[in-house]
Length: 546
Image (cartoon, rainbow, N blue to C red; front, side, top):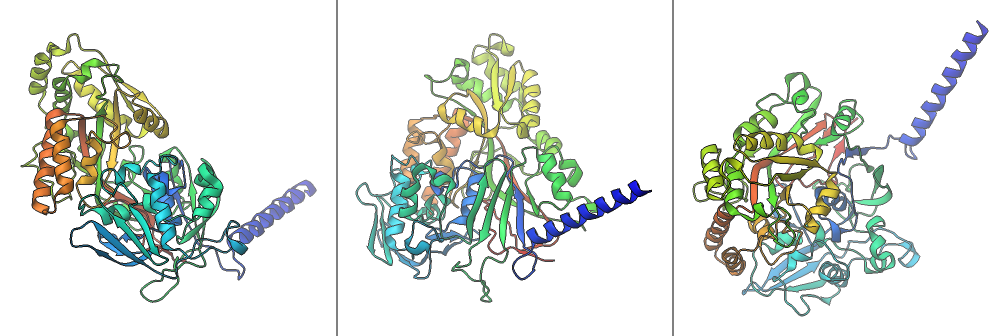
């Protein structure tokens, strides 16, 4: 009995210690519970430096820490941010921005007395010049290729006036400036850390950097000096901080979400799609009173890409356009979406530009549908009747897309095309495609601003990888792209966009799979999370109710 009493007392003591520990870690100075928004980033974050905001994982984190001159709302409208207003010259070449006078960088020891200085036009000029500086090697440098003036494109006229000069008119330019690549950074801190600014970020955003244990946890804290307020005059942000976990296994992350340990899960994974969605893509009735589902069309095209650089492509059969066309005709996208995606998204039976953009028109840009007989005919014309003599093709992908790739592999096998699948971690696959070391690979392209040019630039021959991972370089396409950049007539530009999309279908540098949809599952106490077609995560307005 004494032993039993001792064990009972020990357990009680441990519970008390755990309770005290939990109370201490979850309460602020006034005893109120800390409200941290918790989400998981399965693919990991490679940099918190805006100059390297090249994928969704980086973009989401950067968006909490930094601001740009302008910002995009959930309806894709360009709104003021650090710039309170702007003027565009009649010829469309000069943009003059008038800055707010109450935006300050986060506190940091690099500043006098450790207090963040006010943002000036010199900071803006430095930040944008940094993106195009070859020494920085920003993955966003291509955004300004052939768009901004060659000499002094970014200038501070005075502390509160910034000016940008273009080579020719480019209507989507404000959209480009809303991208996280164009966030404003402090020169003194960026130059103090150099390449290590990636893990020592200082911006003007609603949250400040606290700690980042790579592939373990990222913690951001509310910025007490943030300049934005709600329409009712409340200080933003409305939560105490953000906590990002890095659980690679998406099913494990989903189970944590169901247990209440995460506030949001983004997207749908094959490992749990049938647990949460019906076959028609709606939330299962038994979950409707436990979690919330937000959804929106997504400016994201999922595709397979071919490496078309003959000096890098090891499987020369893929340089034959008829082989690429045969692959495009050789599998059923609609069946793939129904059985593997619960109809989340839309089969890509038009071009590269997804539904939602004004230039999208499946009649003017007819794409590929399932036609195995046509695929066999093309293989025979390419010199590979029934696939005879065709080298086995290696398709490189990640775990998340293994089921889609196996579906395609099985259907192509039926027409004589042998496909081997290699699985890689996402970061490793991105690196391989950037270096041109993958012959045939799965990829996706998320639109950066609300203009179809954001897709068509991916296949422009003048662009490196990124964004042109396929190394596609077609003279007719390149010429149409340059004309579209110079066009000030919206209808003329849309017609050129459709012409380029038809060339993509004809030359088949890619295999369009589907146009995606944004899904966000959140806990019932999460308010004002919002959802948008770019799947940009902004947490400054989020509220967590008790």
